[in-house]
Length: 73
Picture 1 (tube, rainbow, N blue to C red):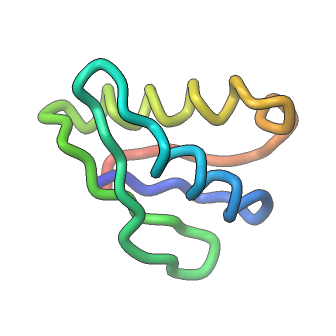
Picture 2 (tube, helix red, strand yellow):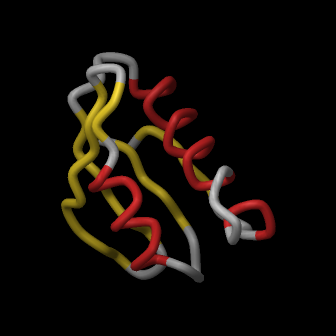
């Protein structure tokens, strides 16, 4: 499981990660607690999954200015 912490663009983050299915990596939204969004993933390396999620978010037009954290949970 990974955790994305962001006060803004939460709906967009959930939509982006739920739609991702490449390189045998998938994310599935589990729950929201405050500003934290939790995602299950089929990745065995959670650090790499968090890095991939961060890169996906940063790759969005709104992602480069968004303050957020992506870590294994």
